[in-house]
Image (cartoon, one colour):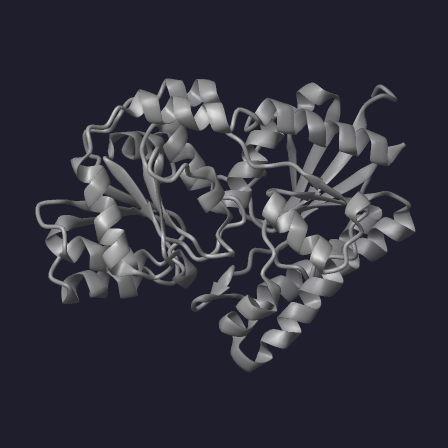
Length: 379
């Protein structure tokens, strides 16, 4: 192997196609581009496959058996702990730099030990900063423990690649040295989006994302009750799935709602997004908002919330490419959805406006910036 090739160990408990989520899609796009950057990449994860791991330019290796990611509505502490312990196996692997994602935090502590003993840099992608307030909402009285772990974990990496400027500022407020932080946003494949055809199965209103409480899909169902003659599609799975089905029945809108579940083909997801009239994502917490970016890149307006932890709102030009509403306000959501449902939409205009504002969201550019980080850190 050429000496100029940098060996990168990507450590993540979940990857596509076995588990869907924002971080998984980010890695998918980057992994497809890193070999072209003279990087030799191996992904170390849980054993998601039944037989042999997939073959190709990216190698996959299991360092842990597969554990359930969630226990009820929350991330499994057992899974986080067992995966963290498994990362000690990295002591005996061959690499020049470790790249890990922040979640679920615990694995960063043994990885720091591994990186120190192996004398290699530890680069961590930071998707979002929860902070003490959200930890209290998530874990109740035990939230201070999660907040403390997050704060400690933020001091561990050699370099932090954070996906938004808002999250970067929160890390600085937590005491992370500014020279350790680089903003590398999530991005889009503009050529891919330009080829997407609208799905004939698309509903009027669409919701996309993991079905967890902070996504506030319940608000969209409640808004639908006040907008007759429209249909809603919900793409995603998660701990809220059964509760949302029950809520649709209680609200009397179940006959107008399609729960698509997990749509494995991302092209099919994009077709539904492009075919919808408006996307409703009133989430209270987004580290970036990939679903919002994709919708706007396709020319479909998005309604989202103004919550301080929702970085996705920064992708929307209020009144031009979508609407930003008060957090948790069903009446405002109804008004915003009605506005876009009755507007004379030109999806090309919305898409062009979005790209004019966010032309930096290119996966090729982000992959190159990562490669430079890896190469500089490994010197």
